[in-house]
Image (tube, rainbow, N blue to C red):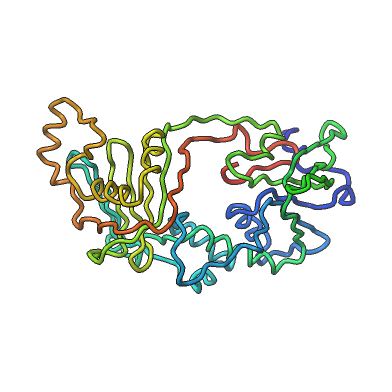
Length: 356
């Protein structure tokens, strides 16, 4: 269709500064560029520019003995295969920050509902891995240094995109204005294609007049890295309990560290995040290990379904009770939970990536 033709068609390669400009240097963007270039025949004069407000080369690499970051990914087999395909996986393994999980227990706070998964059931060594976001990103960014065709504009954001129509089926290059985040000075760049990998609040998407549809779930996720006691007999187990207010997950990390992800109504998330660490520890342990609903929540249903479910509540306990939290080792962070998708993933000279 004509719209597809307008995505990339132009007059000649001399019309632009870069073949590709990528806004954002996060995991999605760097995975995309590595996938595009690894073992490819792409070389000069092809040129790529990455724009990001943060200088990703100045990010401190993880110390193998440091406390795990609270921002973690659960990597499935598909994600691992992608990382292998771009020469990243072996580098990540060398960091000694990977934690396999071999089983999952998921159960509800009242009622007999529960489900479990074990890697042995499907004859694999593990169901996946838990890994910190910064470790993945560091490996991806380091790999980009192998490609001389990439320029970096760190400390900048895209502030304007203009695309001029040449004729019915041809558009000129995308003319980009970038702004320095410190002194607010601007520069002009042109490109054949802009990739917006700048997240859920994507400036590229907004400047391209691509709308979104979605809604808020009215919840926030609280995350933190915690330490547990020595009662943890299943260090490779991920737990998730469904409470009346939302799920509470405990993800395995190395040693006695765990990642906590607690989904709560916004008001409850704000209340809990203002408590002391000791008070939060009590709530986490009560929520994961106590059959009775937390007294704070007072939302017991007044019907026969609750009474029947409560009678059999013991059936919903996981085979192995989660270990008890003894300390919170990172600041509590919160993130809004929402559904959002763009109504189109491309426009003239623009393609959206990831959450954008």
